[in-house]
Image (cartoon, rainbow, N blue to C red; front, side, top):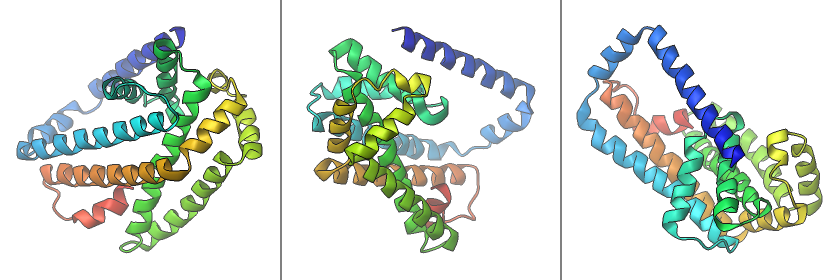
Length: 242
């Protein structure tokens, strides 16, 4: 619980600093832009954002079930939302609060749940890489970036499925204080990681990740429409946003 309390304090501090920044910047310009926003686009934007959240939450639930962590869909989604609330922390380390909640509420070892969170990062990246490659049909630079990051992503998936490489990777990561708290058992961590990044779960998670980023791109398109930016087409938004 101490770890969670620290995260909450960091969240409050970040909110306070961000609010102060807005106050001392040209708040008039910001309000002017907001007031000119075409509110008829809001229902579509909110629907897309919520649907995107549902897809991400579903991916989290699928990965939990894949390693025999059987909790209700409602509890699973609530825990996932807790991680979203702390996603501002550099490196998305705030996501690890989900592992702490699973341990406190269901007595699930962090060594079993933490690898799921890492695999989520890989799938999120896979969705972005897929959109970059798709964007290569319109922007040459997008294709190059997709290929470069795609190679890096493949390397990480190889590490996740090689016990020797994964053990070395965890040893390096354990030198970071906040991550060291979640590397309790190398064997359990590897078993969970391998299950989470291979087979049927990997295919479903990749498809859900691609769907999520595609929906997010459409939401960005409608936000731009709301501000009167009509020069960018929806097919251009996808590679630009990714």
